[in-house]
Image (cartoon, rainbow, N blue to C red; front, side):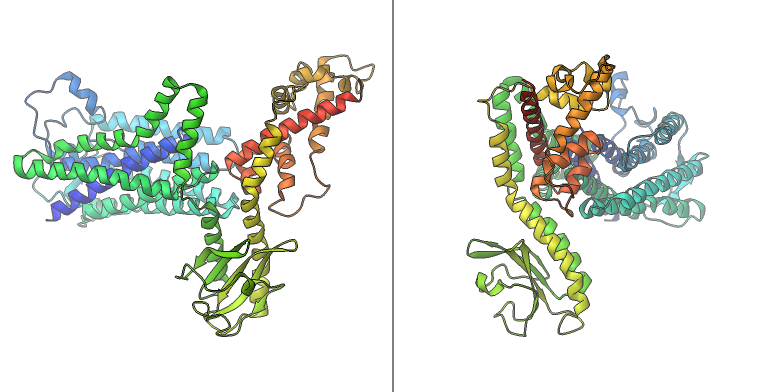
Length: 606
């Protein structure tokens, strides 16, 4: 029975690892972080595969043709003939920690500098060297007379302790990289995912002392505990990176993640049933199905990616865009990004004042609905919207509201200017019957920010529709091509490139040149000044308001941040609380506005 538990656990771990890796890569195929994380997970999956094949080895082949080696590139040459001992230390997992080390360096803020690049190169050099060495000399020797379910049965080879030391060292480097990323990340949602990755790294690092205890002190460490540590670690890493990548790209994944997990789990359950019947009835070696099930996960998970590739071959561009938008809409159905974000903020707020429960209500016409809740079970409230309309924070008396709000103690109205858009309702504090003045002061600033975030999200659709109508007008033929303006903004500090652009031929550039300005570089400097001036005309006021800035500031802040201050797009999106789609649409519309400003400035000189 114990062998069955170990096999099932490693089987689930292998399935989870392969699926998570494919999920991350397929959702962000152009993101290097996704590929490095996927390679990390797939490499760790080799450990689970080793254990499965060792405890249930394939029968030795009658012959080993050369082409068979293609499928076992990372196993020692004698693995097929050496039985469970060879399978147990077959797949080389050395690259896993190096891939994760590279991924954590990418997470660091700022560009890749020479020191980070040197560390990445050194890591890969160590991994390549270790693979070639370990293929010739085994890492450990196994005693075939003892129980393979315990780690102490593996007698350390000469490379075992240097390997563990290097593993521990790179794990420490990974943790340092993530902690430094957390230090410089101020947005709460990405910060949470980075914390998840740090916890996962620590859990994975615990496998090193477990192996040392088994090797040095011959302590009977169960192989099952080793598998469980790695299973928890890869699950946290996979989910953390998936959420982090989605946040950086302005996506949400909660329902998509569950949908993918359930559908993949159903496929694996069917294959597992077929495997069980084949093993029980026909005595087929169970290990022979492992590679089939791995292939099933891969093929099932790549269906969407394959469909997208075929679309590019079969359909015209217009049809491809429609189909891509429909698939994207299908992924987003049921996603509640605003509610999820507000729920996280509400949880933190309720914990800070020790509230027994909390609700965030939003108003729509004459109705109200629960946007987020904390420790509150009811989904509907009998109260009318008038019961929550207040000018300022008020203390509520016991039983002032009918159930389920009979123990509500505080009502904080959520205002935008003079309009109340919702309300924050808190139950009594856990250590008192009412909230103190200090507690209320602590709630005022977060509630204002909450109001701004809710209002911004509610108006996003309406704003984008208006913006699209303005920016997509095709009746007016642009005198100054928008593409030229965008190229000029991308090269705004390259005076030579600006001097060769179409913008350098404008009359408003000529009037800004003196008699001594005769080179194309001089014209480029004048184009730089004119572009900066045109972007500044999008600025609504001289003083930028507090975060998050109002909508009318977004075009200016996006152009000024992306092109003049050279900020990362993800930092601008985090500052403005907008998705990647909203960011790109606003940027395009703002560039068209700059082109029109330049046209209007040019007409003065005609």
